[in-house]
Length: 294
Ligand code: MN
Image (tube, rainbow, N blue to C red; front, side, top):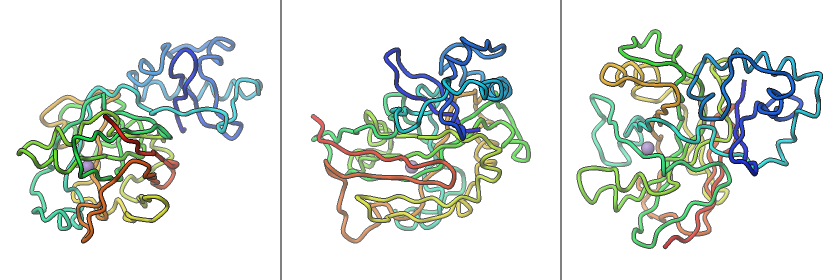
């Protein structure tokens, strides 16, 4: 199943992408009734994997009601997880990216965080403040948790996943490296575009078997494969959940492969007007335009 959010006059609404279009979940619930599903996008995401069966059931019953489906092209999609609980990011999780960053290959996952202010949707403009200069992109596979996880072994870890989406871990390198803590350069407003699709695990049976690509103004800049992660998704969940409880709606950005501007001989940092697009197999296309900020 592929979940989306989209903008309405009343805020973000939840949709399910189907062959007939995007199912308007709230309208379907009003007409057909839906047991087991709370109201509101964040509440459904907070329910996690338990929401999937009621949603599937609703999609099935809605088939006889074509007016409950909307054309995707007529909707403005939002971030599939509008208000993540935790945003945990993994640094240097691909060997070739660690090498281009002139950093050691890590012995343990390098973890840092972003805050909710960083979340942006597909198509959203992202402002580059004038107070920094070295703006960079990072295509990443983002994992959305679907069940409470504490001390989960790697063998079972993928059972705790609600789904996967594209992410772009936008970074201000000058702020990231100003001190020993990367946070400031990572959590500017809008610096984590995600989406457009949240694909559940039956759509993505193996998160380590996905091509991941990023284009800058139409030029392919990153073209890699999730099999090259140093710490695969299951090991990341096991490692993190050994130390902190993960909840439904928490997200993990699993690191970027090689090809970032930092690693190029000519560091042509991002500038207003640039268009950055991320595509991972089955997760759609996440495109954002950068604009001048204050
Ligand atoms: Mn990153």
